[in-house]
Length: 141
Image 1 (cartoon, helix red, strand yellow):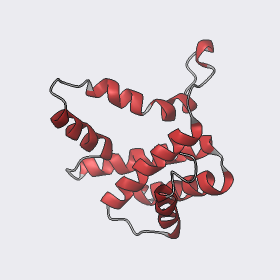
Image 2: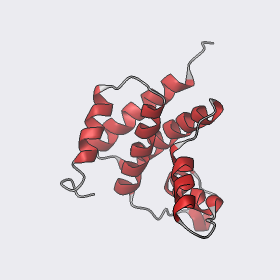
Image 3: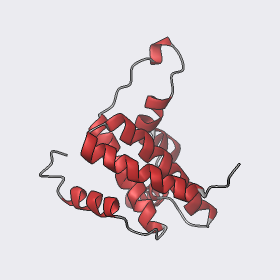
């Protein structure tokens, strides 16, 4: 049995998520891969005493709004698309309601953000996705 760095595993999943999204237009696969990578990056950021991107966003939202926000409900909604495609709890849960292209785009964006927060080496695919991100008004998102 060999030992593998989970950040390197997440890097591989994010690379494939980007390729699957941009090149193959397989949005469910890219959503699943990006979600797995983001979970690892986010957890590592927290382990090292930092914050993941969604926590940072919620902290900023708390400063903007005068009334308290339901962080747990927002996080559950935020992770809905990732979780709905990988779980089947009962017969009524057979169909997933989501926008796979938009949801995978957002999750890849979050994973790339955390990848950069961790100061990982920027790969050609990360650069390619960042360029794609800039062109979102042109590519229909």
